[in-house]
Image (tube, rainbow, N blue to C red; front, side, top):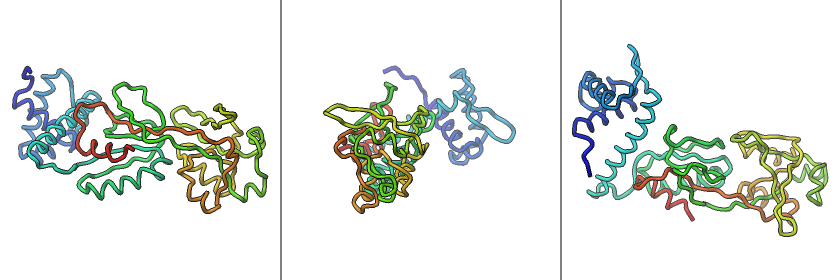
Length: 299
């Protein structure tokens, strides 16, 4: 293998990452035990070598350029892998450690993921877990995530997707709503009911309701008496308080169904599912903390 970096260049990359993390040449110099001038010279050499401006400098602060931000994310991950490789080969990291960032949609996070993460940290207390609960799509490179849970396969070929489960769907309403409006007896009856819809942040469209009829999958738009956006669990809460009928994940309303607070409707048309995938960037060597969580979460 051809040698691409000398010791000075590797040191400059380390100081660059420190400056990006600290947001200051002075703070980076304090962490590294060198002078602010040394940090500034190292980064200037790096910018000259790359032919790219990495920081916008003012008298009061520095900030990464767009190109600098992209380079920073890649360099930080590469240095992290080097540190981890040394720990593994010397036996210093028998257990995973470090910060791990994961993004998950609200229904899966609250009903599945958070409980599993609590159990994961009991096994690996040296791992710092940062969970972002949101239904929006995230950018791994720009936002620094290690993993994400999503309901669709990614279009990006640089991402790996592993199926977590096929989540069963169920149609529910509260006893109070059913007493007031009556039970639907067929799919066609839903047109005359208050249907609580969820709007996908990625498309701005309502998620169609899916059912099995005579062995075939059918989709219904339903009415839009109530529309929830951003937080999927809003449709469950609305249904629980008598606001209408919700088409939701069975795992997110299991307790309410068991207690009678919600009632399952039209079970003869059940059987449809939606998948959930664990998604992460393709890499030859995943950090130990990420690899451990992937193995822990997958069935």
